Length: 186
Length: 395
Image (cartoon, rainbow over all chains, first blue to last red; front, side, top):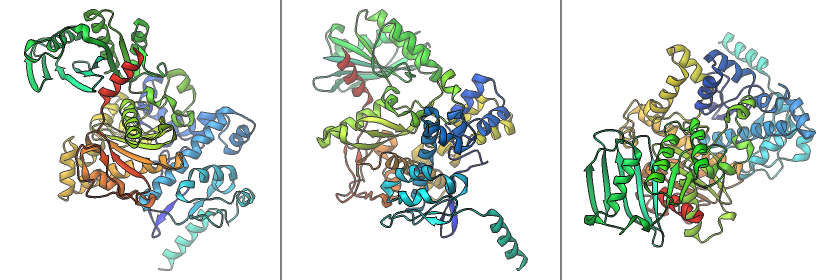
C-alpha cells in the first residue's frame, strides 16, 4: 500500500517471498506467527497448497469481516455498525501504521508519507485512521481536506504536520513505458 | 508467609522457597531427568550448593525428595513443611479460560490440561506437578500463575489474526502471548522504583532471552505483545523464526517435502539468529562472530535488533507514545551492544542511551541520558517472585 525510499532506493518493503506477506490485505493474511499456519493445517488436515489458498483468498479483511472482498463494502458495513467489519478495518489500519513505524526505524526518520492504489487513493477514512496512529511521529492530517481527496494527486497533511502526507495515484503503466524508453534510448 | 514456587517441565522441576516478608530466597534448585534412573537435584540453601543423585520416577517422588531438602539438618531453612503456607505453580498456557491467576482445584487442573493443546510440552507437566503436590502435601493451598493471563487484557484488534474468523471460534486460534509474568513483574517494579502510578504509564517491555517477546503495557495492562498463538511468533529469536510471510512455510514444505510438524520443528529449533548465521544456538557466540566480521552473524544480529526496534516503534504508534523502555531477560540484561544497537535505531524518537551507564550487566538501573525523551531501564526479571506475590494475594 505504500513504498518508502531512502535516496530513491527501496530499503524495506512489507511484501515477502510472495505477495502474501506483509500487511493485512483484502483477502490475504500478511505476515503471521508461523504456528498459526501449521496449527491450522493440522486441525483442518490441509496440504500446503490448500493452506496457501486459504491464506491468499479467504483471509485478510475478508476473513475477519466475512463481508466482502471489496474494501468499500467492508467500510460501508463498518459504518452501519458491523462489529466484524469494524474489527477487520481496525486490524488493517493498525498493521499499516505499524509497518510505517517499522519503515521509519529502517530509515532513521521519514520526510514524506504517500498513499496510493485503491484504498490509499480513495479510502479517506482509512487514511485518517492510519495517520491517527502515526501522530506520535509528527504526522498530522488535514482531516477536512483529506475527506475531499479521492483518486487525485494532493497533499492531505496539515500545514504544521512534521511529515507531509500525499495522495499520489499510481501509474504503473506509465512507469513501465518510461523504463522501456530509457532502455531503448541507451 | 513462606511460599514455594514450582516450575514443572516434562522431565524437570525448578523451585524456589521464598520468604515473603523479606522477599528472600531461602532455597532454590532444579531436579533434572525426572523419570530416569540418573535423575539428580541441584539444591542451593544457606550458601551451600549440593548436587545429589537420586532416582525419581515421577514428579511425586521428585517433589518428596525436594521437600526433604528444606528440612535437611545440614542446610535446613525450615523446621517443618507446615511452615510453607502455599504453593505457586507456573503454567505456560491458560488459553482463554484463565483471565487471571487461579486457586487450584480439580476443575482448574482439568482446564489446565485442556489448554495443553497450545503448550503440549509444558501444561501436562504443570498438571502432573499439581497432582503430585496434592498427594505429598494434602490440603496445602495452591495457585496457578499463567504466562498468558497478563495478555488477556489486549483489545480484540490486537489478538485476532487476519485468517478466516471461524478458526478463532472453532479452534481458539488467536494471539495469546507469553512471558506475561516477566512483563508484569518488570513493569510493576518500574512503577515502584519511579514512585509513579502505573495506571498512567505507557511502557514497552523487552524480554530478550532464548525466547524473546516485546510487550506494550498501557496503564499497567498488556495492550499488545509480539509472541502469538505460541512462543514461535513475533521477533526472530535465538533459534525461532518469529513472524513470517506464510508462503515461506508452504514453499519450504513443498520443496523439502516435509509435514507441518517437521516445519514447526525447523522454525522452532533451527531458525532465528542461529538459522541466519549458521552458528551455534548461543547468542554470545553469534555476537562475537558478528564483531569479528562474520557477514551472516552480522545480518543475524542486525535483523534481531531491527525487529525489536520496529516493535518498539510499532507500540509507540499504537499507544501514541511511550514513557519507558525496559530491557530484561538474559540478553536484555546482559548484552550491552544489543541494547546499544536497538536504542541507536530509535534515535529518531528521541531515545538517547548513555553509553557509560549502559556498560553494565544484570543491574537494575536507568541507562538513558537525562535528556532522553524516553527513559530506558534495565530491570532484571524475577518471575518466581512475581508468582509468589500473585500466590500470596490469592491465599
